[in-house]
Length: 257
Ligand code: NDP
Ligand code: 8X3
Image (cartoon, rainbow, N blue to C red; front, side, top):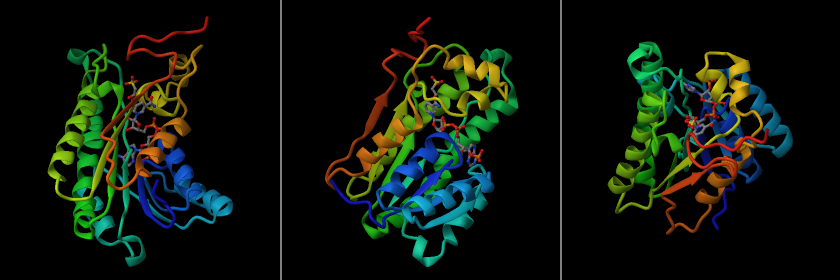
C-alpha cells in the first residue's frame, strides 16, 4: 500500500455526492486537495470543514468542465505548490431526463455529452502530460453500470458512460510504457443528488428511485477509489463494477416492500 500523505489530488464535481465523499476520504488519508465544481460556496464550506477536521490544505477551482479554455487556463495557472497533480478523479457528471430517444431533449443530450465525455477528456488532456513528464500519476474515471448495460430511457446517458469506458481503456493502452495508472470505477445505484438532477429538480420523483432499497452511499465509492489508488505502484486496477446487494442490473432492483 502506498501513502497518500501530501499527494495532490484533483477531484472534479467535489461540491456534492461522490466527489464530496472522495474529498473527505482523501483528506483523512493526508492528501492535499484541489476541489473543482461550479458551486464555489459549497467547495468553500467543504474546504473549511476539511481544514477543521484534518488540517487539510485545499485549492479551490470554480470550474465548468465543459469550458475547454477555462479548463486549460486553471490547470496551466495552478500555483507552483499545486501544479504537480498526483491523482486526477474525473467525477463531475450528470444525467438529464429519462425520455425515449426519439422524444429526447437536445439540451439534455448536449449537457450530458459535454460534461460526461468532453469535460472528462479536457481534464485528462491537460493534466496527464504533466503526470507522464514527472513519471508518476493516477487517473480515476467515474463510469457507471450504465456504460455496461443500456436501459430504457437511459440512451444518451448510457452512451456517455460507454464512452467513459472506451476512453479509460484507450488511455490505459496509450499510457503503456509509462508508470501512470488508470482506473475506471463503475457504480450502480448511489444515493446522491444524481436523480434530482436527472429529473430537473423533481425531488419526489428522485426519492422514489431509492425507496425501499438500500443503495450504495458516496462513502462506499470513495472507499473503493482509495483502495485503487493505494495499491503498490506496479498494480493497476483497471475497472471496478460495484452495486448494492439489492441491485442485480440497471433494471433489476429488489425493493423491501
Ligand atoms: P451529484 O449530482 O451529487 O454530483 C455531481 C457533481 O458533478 C457535482 O459536484 C456537480 O457540481 C458536478 N458537475 C456537474 N456538472 C458539472 C460541470 N459542468 N462542471 C463541473 N462540475 C460539474 O451526483 P453523483 O455524486 O452521483 O455523481 C458523480 C459521478 O458519479 C457522475 O459522473 C455520475 O454520472 C456518476 N455515477 C453516479 C451514480 C449514482 O447512482 N449516483 C452511479 C454511477 C455513476 P456543480 O453542480 O457544483 O458544478
Ligand atoms: C448511474 C446509475 O443506473 O442510474 O450511473 O444509470 S444508473
